[in-house]
Length: 254
Image 1 (cartoon, one colour):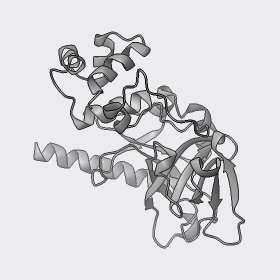
Image 2: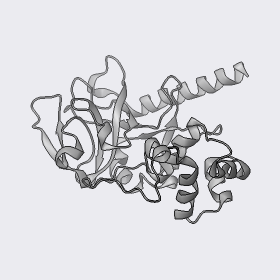
Image 3: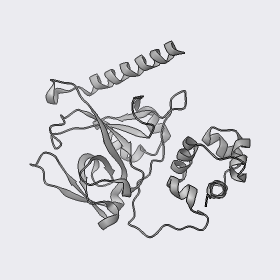
Image 4: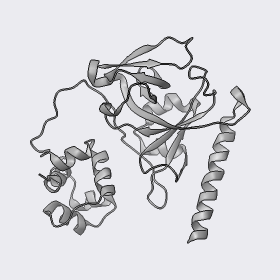
């Protein structure tokens, strides 16, 4: 059974939002939201994705569960949840860039829209539509990935999506921001095992309740032939040039 119509009204009321408030957050007309809630129209995929992110539920739960009565099975606590993003002038999500020197500040500001606005932002149109963030990686624990590289990660909404043996950027209260290969999903034993590709580093575990965000590595950006001397500012400049070239191409097409 499709519960999305009743769920929209229920979730909106849990926030004490008017239809006007909610429609503004979704960037749609109030009348269209009313049609969604009354079952006279169905929201498209992009709107469903946005709603799921706002309320921290899965798309499946939003569509197939009566959220007014539904309670998730008890599972280990995890704080994984993107609370804020930034968008460009066309409403597309940016990729925010977190330099190594901003790692400590990110732990406090990752959910603060004003903090994210202070970070450099760019876009990569060849990536599939999703939520991404970029992190500067320091050290040799994930060699051959050179220190100073930028790792672009796709947001992992739920622990069940973490796959053993893949690389992730883990943001946690205890370890800060780390780039590691991950084993043992959170829901299995309340911990993750984090391993370095450089075998001189010992693996270690992290508790589920310490995890703030998880980003699946999808892209590595670094300068060739510069080894550990890769310049973060040079990479930032490269990304900015890419963004300007993309904007120029868009304007030319228009």
